[in-house]
Length: 461
Image (cartoon, rainbow, N blue to C red; front, side, top):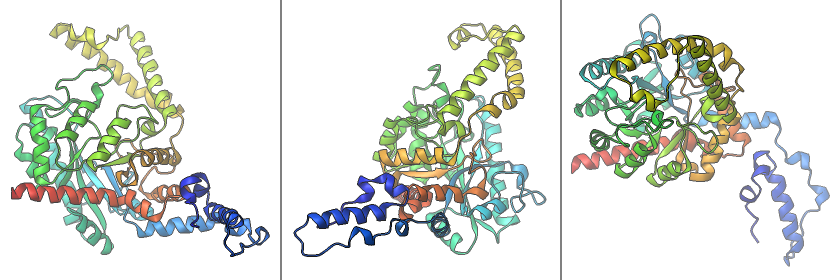
C-alpha cells in the first residue's frame, strides 16, 4: 500500500521540516493495519530528533539551492547618473541594486527599467518622454558594452541568460515601464524591441494614450474605459515583435481587455495579491485566474504597502490626515473630483496651484511623521503573497520582483545583497528546489520563450 502524500495533507509539517517524521508515523499506522506479513519497525526505534533538520542544515540546503538556480528580479529602476565612466554599478553605490550588491546576494539577473513618468498627451509630452526613454536604453547598453563588458551582459533571450550565467557574468535585461514614450508612432515598439526591451506596460501612474491606469480606481476617473483603440493596436504590435505585455500598472478593465486580445502570455512584472493587501496596484482573484488561463506569470513584488495590509492602511490614513491638517492650516479646501471637474479652467488652475503647495508640504513631512511609524513589511509577508498565489493559480504562474530603487525593499530584502533571504524563507515554507527554480526564473523565461516563438509565427504570417 503506498504512503499518503504528506506534503498534500500535512503542509504545516512540511514547512517545519517534519515531513519525514510524519511519513514514518503514517507508515507505521498503515503497516499495523495491513495484512502484509512485513513487520514495521517499533516506534521506540524511531528518533524524532534524528528526523529533524537543524537550522544550520536548513540554511546550508537553502544556500545550495540559491547557488544552483538562476535568480531573476524583474524590476529594478535606474538613474542614468549612475551609468557613467566615473559613477557606475561596478561600484557599491548607495543604490539598492548594483553589481557589487548583486554578487553579494547571489542575484544573477536584474531587469533594468526604462521608466517614464506620465505627463501630457501631446506632441511635446511624447517628445520629452521618448528622449527620456532613449537616455535610459543608452545607459544600460553603456554599462554592459563599454563600462563593464567582462562583468555583465545584456540578455535578449532565455538562451542568453543561461549562457551569460554559465560564463560567470551578471545579466541585465530591459523592461519598459510606461509605453508613453512610444507616442502615437507604433513603429517605436519595434524600435524599443531592437534596443533590447523585452516587456512593456501600457500605462503607469496616470492614464496614457494607450490605457487607463489603476490610479483612476478610487474616483472611478477613467478616459478610455480600459484600452484606447491605439492601445488595442499596441497589443498586436507587441505580440508581433516579441515584447511581453506587462499589466502591473493599468486599470482592471485595461488588463482584462489585454488578456482577451493578446495572442501570447503576459506578465505582471511587479504586483502582489489583492486578497491579502487591498491596494489598487495588486491583482484580485479574477485577474490572477485570468493570467493563469493566459499562461502568464505574476512577479510578486517586495513593496511594503503592497504586501502588508496594516502598513498600507497606516500609510494611507496617515497621509490623508496629514494632507487634511496642512490644507486646513493653509485655509485650502480639498475638493472631491466631481467638484473639480465643474470648475472653470481658470478656477481649476488656481485650485491645482494651491493643492501643489499642500502636496509639497506633505512630501516634506510624510517621511518622518507617517512612514517612520508604519508597521514594517517583511520577507515573511512577501512569501505569504507567494503562498497565496501558488495556492490559487499554481507554481507555474508565480515569480519574484523587488521594485528596488523605485520604492521597493522590505525588512530582510532591502537591497540585492539580501536576496538569499527570499530563498531561505521559501525553503522554510517547504518549497522544493524545482518550485523555487520556477519562481526565481523558470516561469518568466518560459513566458519569454513563448512570446518570442509567437512573434516569429506572426511575422511569418
